[in-house]
Each structure stands twice: as C-alpha cells, then as structure tokens.
Image 1 (tube, helix red, strand yellow):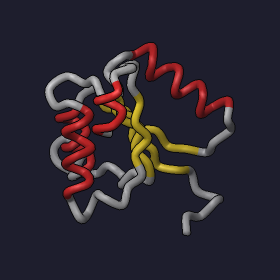
Image 2 (cartoon, rainbow, N blue to C red):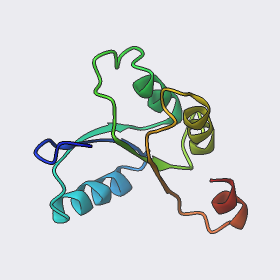
Image 3 (cartoon, rainbow, N blue to C red):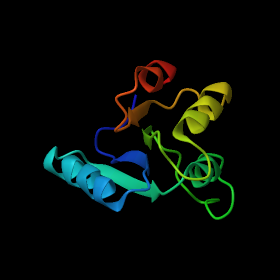
Image 4 (cartoon, one colour):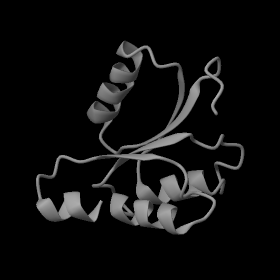
Length: 108
C-alpha cells in the first residue's frame, strides 16, 4: 500500500510540450501530490524504466502516463515491453492518444 504522505512517482512519456504542460496543470489542479519525470520518446521511456543511462538513479514510477504516438519507439512498443517484463508489468499505465482509430484503442 503506498504511503499517502509521500508523493506519487509518475513517469510522463510525451513528446508534445503543450500536451505535457496540460497534464502537469491537470495534476496540479487535482492537487495530486506527485513527483513527475518527463521523457519525450519511447526509447528514453524504456531506458528510464530499466534504469539505464542516463536514468540510473531514477525512482521507479508508480504510474506511467504514456502517449501512443512517440518518436523512436512507439507507445504501443513501450506498453508491450512493459507488459512482457516481470519487473515492469505491475506498473499501471494510463494511455493517451489523439487517435480515434478503433485499432489503436483495441491494441492498447
């Protein structure tokens, strides 16, 4: 059970600065105590989650907010890698996308 006195560790994987700013503002307005880490592509997200360079000291996120449309490695690939890794599969993932395509929704 998480300690309610401690901020929630959140990893935001978002390449659009405007969308990242809106998510930060939403967290602030919701008064959610959090520590937010931001990476801008799927490759960086996987390095962060695996504590690989330059994220060796990164805290393990308690939740990941993941955009599907990312450069380098897609959000779908990040989600697939997380769910196939026993050390990462328990981390809840909130998927964000501007896609209205049913296949994107179903695949996630």
